[in-house]
Length: 192
Image (tube, rainbow, N blue to C red; front, side, top):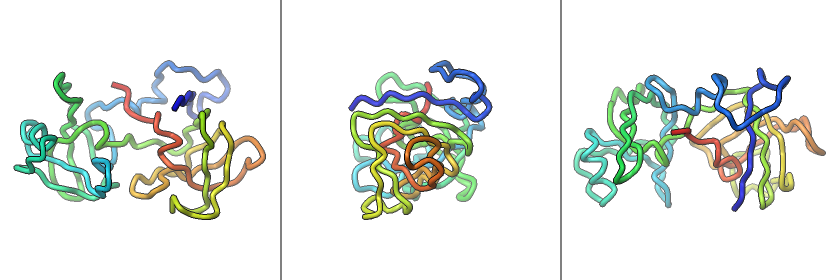
């Protein structure tokens, strides 16, 4: 799959969008006090694993659950710090305000950036981009936007099957609002 994308925010529309990181893309940097969301561990899991220590989290990758708990996808979290583990992947120390829990989880794939409303995304895919009026991924009302689309993020909901509520800004469906899957926007991830 070859996904090429350009991203900018509304504030940058007057100038060319580039791959360079600007202050308007600070949401992509996993810095202390950055807001994010828990997402699933993958597979059929509907929960994310958070452990009390980095060591317990590393062991959880080998099926040990000592010191670890599962939390539902979509919970808002605050990144406190990130440890770059050369043997595994970046591990984030997070705080889950609703649970009053501090713990450790993988930066990717267990956390998703909190993508701000108003972010403009230019998508170009080797496959068709699917757009729907519902969050249900199997919805029969899905529209084929073709291989490219420009959308404005209205809302990001990581707990649904389609996570991005967007406004289409170009093409035959311009002005329509609906949901896109993270499969079509998977490059909107952390820069680390």
